[in-house]
Length: 324
Image 1 (cartoon, rainbow, N blue to C red):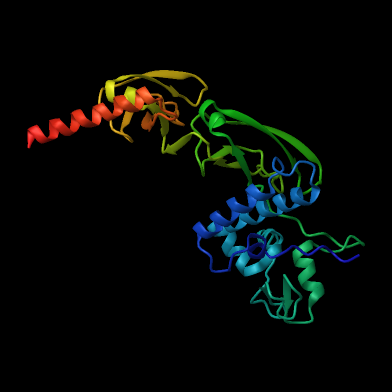
Image 2 (cartoon, helix red, strand yellow):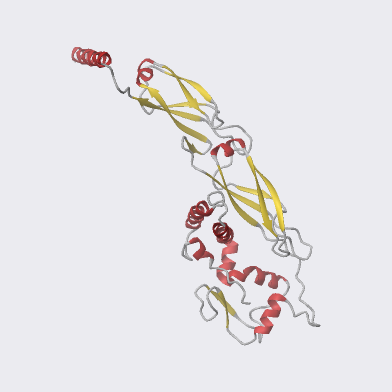
């Protein structure tokens, strides 16, 4: 049976090979939201695509890993391990040279292009000698590979802190393991949460890699986030804006705060509620909440109400003429 060929990571994210880090991140976030298991419950195809997208982003978002991928293609980790074990792929007389080409270049789509007939020597260097009476190459101690896992949370979860449980697969044994991770209060887009020693196992007795959660926060229908500050529009009756009064301001923890509105408050005016915004992720306090006045005009006026507004217009007009 032919081995499964991994798709080119650039094609997975739909970006060019010269894409910037920002372009890669933007493409990843768009696709991760589209194929996230929470958005496509029970859809195995979407789950597989989500995993593939995460795998591609984990490599292309890391400058060092991307450099190695561009040079060696999807087998870069195996080649790096072989090099660490003392294998010499280039420069030795009689050795095989090769190049990675996402477009094939003679080696097939997404594969290695061998430029000599010494395939056996290269495979021995990559994967060790065959088990039939010959010694298999030993791997030098090497720390396990880090894992990056995207995770999307709500603003409420970011406000209070939350946790997620992930099922990860061991790259060496294929066994599954469960990891429970806490996401701190104050988490924002792009936050990397490190869980030491929960990545892939190391080689030759070396330490395991780390697990990194890459956090994204869903947009909220009420609150707009600016750093650790929040902004929310507060519907305010016209009479309250003119005469002064009190309005209720929602908070991300689900409660409401009473806010005094001064007389003659203009539409769009922002008022600060100190310390009522998002927690600082380092636990040093909280940002502020800004309530933006959104004046609501009265509707379905009665005849009497219309007369009163007409009288007010006449009074304001007379006052303006007197001032002139």
